[in-house]
Image (tube, rainbow, N blue to C red; front, side, top):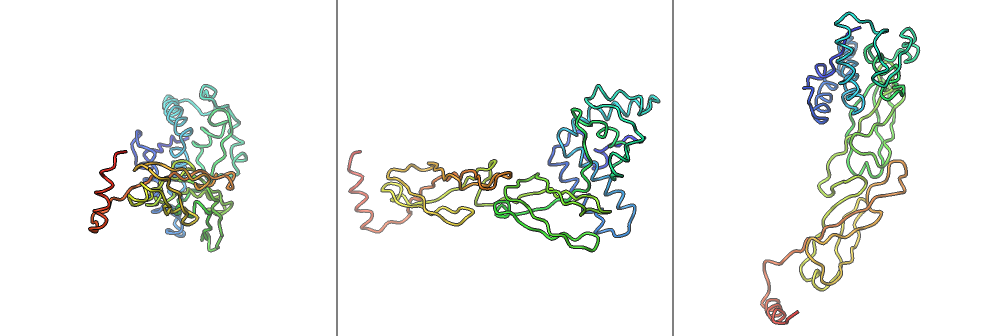
Length: 291
């Protein structure tokens, strides 16, 4: 059985960051995707190999397991050892009957090397099923808030896919049978940055601006949310950079969309550059009053 160097397959260093691995996968997957290389068996095999490499290196537990077990397994083979005699138990896996691997994975599309490492119990003794093909999908923050639909073209057929509300960058959406050769397709969601909001978990952070008079005297501020503009009551004497919390105005929880995070609003106070003579007179008069 051939040792698979997943780092070499993706063209990245062994110390590569998660982002470097994701970028390398994205570039290669697009280059060798069957939709761009119809009836090209070599490109299809390369695409499978790239997906397998990302399936391992794109998953923290699998990558750690591969780094620890994979190199030892390679050395074992170089010394003439056979897969059936390799001591899988010391890595948290369990030995299996190698003749049954194809039945276990239904033909899978994953290499013998992958199935040997992860098929016999995988990380921590739990059987790891192959996840089929993976494809990146980019959506907006608003689509992540409301949920979205996409129409996929595969093998000449169209399939409508629902992206649930609450997904975040890195979320996986399984589309049964939508991959090449009828395998499952996993959409790896990437949520675009939104200049209006910063997302932290299910909470959102934004800013609102009021003039100095509203900050001093109190009033309302217009705040943009993902459900439209709302009025935020500003109490008299509000200080610049003060933060207000709007409960339930954040992102929905993936497993319970009715439960939402919060929206935190940092207040910016705008000082006027130009004053009318009357405004200046009133302000000069007010400045003489001691607080």
